[in-house]
Amino acid sequence: MGWLQDETALDRCAANHVALTPLSHLNRAALIWPDREAVVYGQKRWTYSQYRDRVTRQASMLSALGVMPGDVVATILPNVPAQVEASFGVPACGAILNTINTRLDVDTVAYILSHGGAKVILVDSQFLDLAEAACADVSPPPLLIEVPDTGFPASGRHPVYEDELVKADASFDWILPADEWESIALNYTSGTTGRPKGVVYHHRGAYLITMGTVVSWRMVLYPRLLVVVPLFHCNGWCHTWMAPLVGGTVICLRDVTAPAIFDALADEKVTHFGGAPIVLNALVNAPMSERRPFDQLVEVYTAGAPPPAATLARMEALGFNITHVYGLTETYGHVVENVWQPGDWDALDATDRAAMKARQGVAFPMMEGVDVFAEDGTPVPADGETQGEIAMRGNAVMKGYLKNPEATAEAFAGGWFRSGDLGVKHPDGYIQIRDRAKDIIISGGENVSSVEVEGAIMHHDAVSLCAVVARADDKWGEVPHAFVELRDGASATEAEVIAFVRDRLAGFKTPKAVTFGPLPKTSTGKIQKFVLRERARETPE
Image 1 (cartoon, one colour):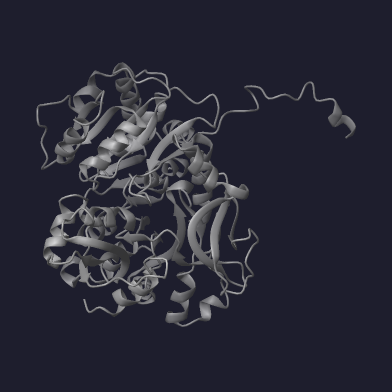
Image 2 (cartoon, rainbow, N blue to C red; image 1 turned 90 degrees about the horizontal axis):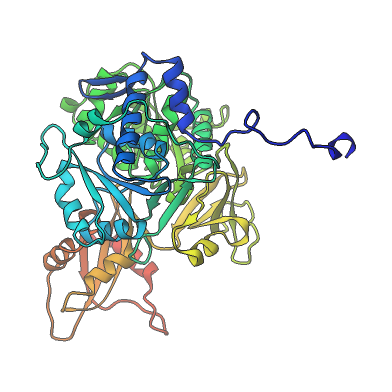
């Protein structure tokens, strides 16, 4: 040990140890780039100095409304400036940000508000009816702050966001974490048993994933980032926390359409964006009348489902460089990347190149590892054939599930986060997903629980038994396909079942096809979903 035995003068102190937090990125950016463009929304533009001022006012506003450190502030917002500002403003008052999926149904939103205990909600006027209906089932209900936008004027029933900012204190002192393990965000999974689980992020992980993303996305200073990924998905893969680190410009996109993306590429000179394969499909299939030329190479992260090889090849021809990434809500978004290997991979033809890019890949820099484990807990051989469960460990893994210690312990069994996804490990160490152990359907980048959909169908009086599986879809990647056994003497049509579910669940969870008939079962009565997946593949669209 030598001199290290005497460490009396080598303790942590304010000079040599500061809790890691992405809040420091914005403070730094406002100091060194006060006049650089930070946020863009249509014709509206804010510099870093103005951005930090608005974030400070948001933090002050929330504090004045009674939000205390450790409280939860929810948002029901599309990708608009208020949502971007909440990434920093909510934690700057010591609170925890809970971004809620705008596509959820009233019952699920009410559950999230109640389970998470939100004290305040920032709500876009377009989704005010959803928020009000959900709050009616929560006691005590959170306070609503309305965020109007072009085409969605204020209702007059609630305080208005911009009015409250004007009244707020621009000199409010940010409440930075004393401990980097403090919670910064609460995100809800889509759930595998109908009810979502609350995933808790800490400041340390949020900080480190921003650092890892800069390295993995090959970023230099001043990127122009188009926020296509909903900011309610893993906090937009943590990209808004990352942008100030490199003096980047966040370009808000309320409605994700091919024309809107091409406009941003041409007018705002976008250099980076992330999106599910459905976004890529929309771009490559857009008619020429909706496209506009751009001359910059655009780096694109894609995740959610392996993109088809033909789509990847067509995207490259348009001027996009695609990087396939993988992660979950529990891992702050992407923590596995398909690192391109120059040389031999460059010489591959378009089909083989796309096949290589479709693999999920290797761990991000801030992670300690990703592996595939057999049921006995040992790593599977790197043969590209033997399946096991994908698991990760590292600094971008959640603290755990809110109020659910049993699920947390199960997820962290053996010192790794167990993803529930089945995959293989190739000889070069790259992993690739083969199936989803929990039957999650990924439709347009949204996770759909087959169990939740089955539960809704089973409420129909004519239904005796049902099962829901994923069916490939050119537009959405995957869609729910329902197989239904009817009660003796009962009748129902495909349209009736679909309408029945649509009345109970969000639209993206609604089956797009229904097949009637006996369900295949094992001798113990368990439905054989692998048989149904084959039938779904064989059923004409």
